Image (tube, rainbow over all chains, first blue to last red):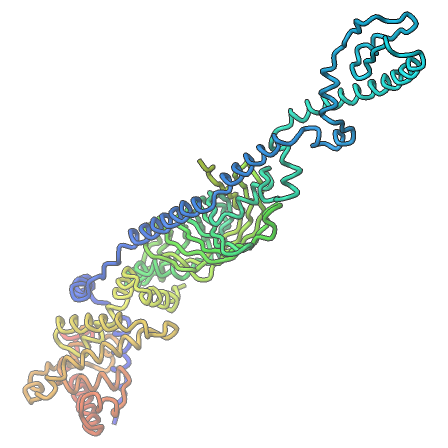
Length: 428
Length: 188
């Protein structure tokens, strides 16, 4: 039969040992670590640096291989040269409609130009007189000594007609010469416009079509920089900056695989709604305080994260020729080069057992973990030609967190604008 | 207002699940006192109790992936410590002799002094019990095991477990009914 003292004793034992603290904490921890040593993490830094370096090496190797297989510049130059040769063989009067309309036989023009006056040295009958023009025109030069008046009249009528024709011919000759002069001043490229445009448009070399050639290439490389707003629940929104390199791999006509490497900064400041992970970070102080019956509260929490971001996105280009409008979506993985956490906490007294005090704890980490595909990327943009071979993209984007990342498992996203410059070195 | 321990516990367990070494230390130091209290109730020797606690924590960290962090961590930890302590004492349970009873230290306690007992006094009280009675008393009265579970755990029958419990309580009653206390209700 149980007596009241039994229940009192049992209750007291439960009370005492539910809150029991032992002095041998440090000794116990030391012995525990001897039995259960820390498993050294793999050198994550070198693994990922090596992976990134290998990826870049593969990209450059592919680029060099592809640049050898597909040489549009050389092919265009060869085609231009062949077309120039053709142009030089074509008579310039043929090239313009005006020349064609007023076409005269070259043989006639040449002959007229070189026509010389042949003075008639034969005896001339007084009753027959001819003008100098008539005399200088070999075409109509006649041995007047032997002709009759009728013939003279006939000749005069013919000469009048020929004079008229001569004037017309000379005018036409002058026009033809002027046109030929203009044609000779036309560059070979412009001369090619009409015939080549009719036959093969892919070899046009103006700036607009150079963009086509650029977008047809299988790999694009570029650099980008951006500014964005980092947001997290409970934190003040703060502006941050980032920059990096990018590469686009052509999958199909309008589809590309976009990846790269970026360094991004994210800063957060919590004055309220501090994440639970940070509360546990001050748990040690909570344990120390529990023995003196006080309460630890995390008053403020600041995080400064500098991360390596590796995005892998699919990009769809709507109009490659005009403004390169595109939309992209994918995931980001990465690690943090530096994680800096600053806690400010206060030891609040309860029932007068301890004095209030505020202290600060700083926690710095480097390459602590790797976050695989924990951020969703969505962006769109438009491109603008800059110079002959470069293209500038304006790309608004959003990074949405799928899970918490970092050693404190913070869940945050960002939204902003990137300026991306895609470039293509000129072929030597 | 005291910080909700549930949130801190859950966060600690979550981090330990991810293999965060720093949070393993935090978890260990947060629950070390509680685990030692359990170990000391079952084992007289302090070094043995510490060893049992460390073995228990090794089991905890190895199996923490299977633990549901939405549940309270203490009962799970307590169960592991108790089992580890019993495994350690199992070989000694067969050797129960009158010598244990005779060597028991008489700690007279007045009924009013029970509420003033501290951990040291309680441990002194429990050390006066034979091992098997001490274990069964702790298992049944403090840690909430049934006689059926105790019988299976210790390899004894349910009735035997009840007998040992009864004897343990009787002995404890003798302790606090014997000699009067000093003015502060404690032994000198």
